[in-house]
Image 1 (cartoon, one colour):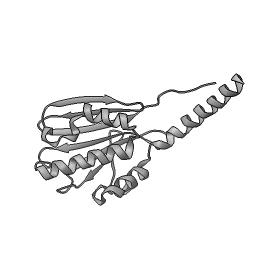
Image 2 (spheres, one colour):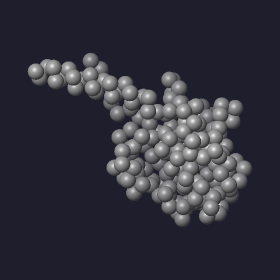
Image 3 (cartoon, helix red, strand yellow):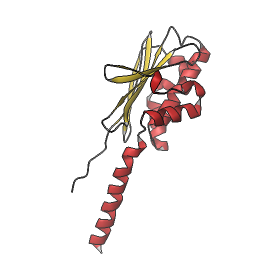
Image 4 (tube, one colour):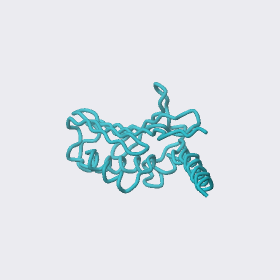
Length: 172
């Protein structure tokens, strides 16, 4: 009976590990997820440019091309990390900061799958939810079960970075 239970548990773990890679979007999935939230977040392959092995796309929230979305893809085409970068010259009104906050939340929701607990802890650890602190000196990190988050800011630039990492690899 114990061997049967161990075998069943092993199959369940293998199944969950094999499904985990499907949670990370590829470029078209991320674009679809973002555009469902807001049409201003819509982009396709023709909007991308590649620089230093990262894909970048400009998004227009309150003015033209005021925020940059960047991401790295792995060998299988899934996105390994996303970064949202904003500039104080273009995100300089309370309305623009609120729009940036919405974009931060949408990108995180579209890329990372977090539990309620992880979401609460992330929100406690990172100040990106508080637009009043934007473009002040900040460097904060949070690590969830499968993602690392970094929120950094200074007087000119602000960046929210999230990457995915594998928890463990089972080999039999």
